[in-house]
Image (cartoon, rainbow, N blue to C red; front, side, top):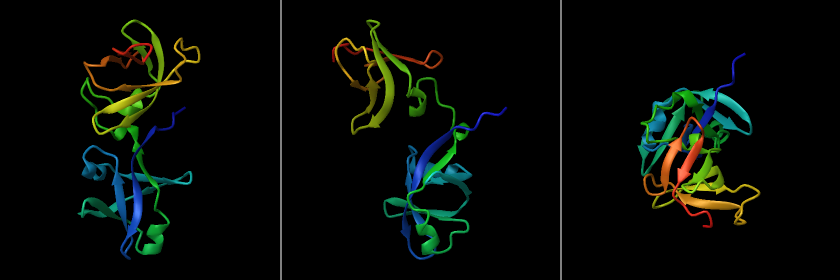
Amino acid sequence: MNQPAEHVVIGQLGAVYGVKGWLKIQSYTDDVEAIFDYHPWQIRKQGKVQEVQVEEWRRHNKGLIAKLAGVDDRDAAHLMTGADIIIEAEQLPELPEDEFYWRDLIGMTVVNTDGYNMGTVDQLMATASNDVMVVKANSNDAFGRSERLIPFIQSQYIQEVDKVNKRIVVDWPSDF
């Protein structure tokens, strides 16, 4: 029995641009134009998923716009606004050993260098200075914490990411 493919959101269809079916594109890829390296796109809106092809795209001011095949007017484009752009996870490139996709870190157990189990990674947030792990504490947290925010700075706070055992070792005090 085949397992369903894991999907990753790489962007979102924004507002309509013009009258010929173009849409603004919000890219979540590191290099914003790299969103167009992935195909086919699937778009998901209100739980419905459909495959789409990018007919044409270009930079516009500081953003991106795209024309999808079969979307030829403003009304058709308007129906797609707000849809997530998704791809199958296996389309993502392999990363070097010391780099990670956020989706791979979520759910990992976080333990500090003293061996204290701080909880599990609930999400990651991008901030102006660095990424931050939101670690949901265990219900029996000795310090009464419900969550901790730990900067994801390798070799400073992040000592080890063990993908196999789904465990992150941090140099972070238990009571902080």
